Length: 157
Image 1 (tube, one colour):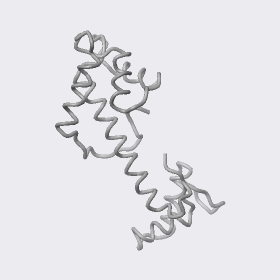
Image 2 (cartoon, rainbow, N blue to C red; image 1 turned 30 degrees about the horizontal axis):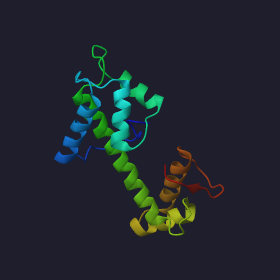
Image 3 (cartoon, one colour; image 1 turned 180 degrees about the vertical axis):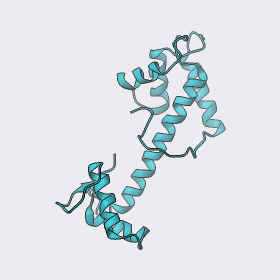
Image 4 (cartoon, rainbow, N blue to C red; image 1 turned 90 degrees about the horizontal axis):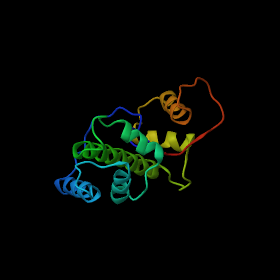
């Protein structure tokens, strides 16, 4: 989804002054009539300019439903906040992919349970194997599972 990764994490990233200026310039360029806000169509163009893809109807609906109903569109501050959140989520996904790739030593695009255990032995050698197994089950299934079953694999989002 556009806004959230579904994870609680502290905000550790801020846009550089040049990024911030670029976002403001994109806002101004997409606000062709100088109305002071971005309409639904203006917003789609801004996303294409900044992220290189056309946002889905669901993404645009989500953004448009979050704006103040007394305004006709997305004001500059709201736009900057949306872009900042999107950039944070993008950065987080890139970090996850980088970490995953470091442990995908066979370049298969997934980690088996054995790969996962090996990775944890490298980064947290004192962590009990039971904990590693539980973490693997949570990652693969999204919930805790007791017992052993077939070996599964994990692919990053």
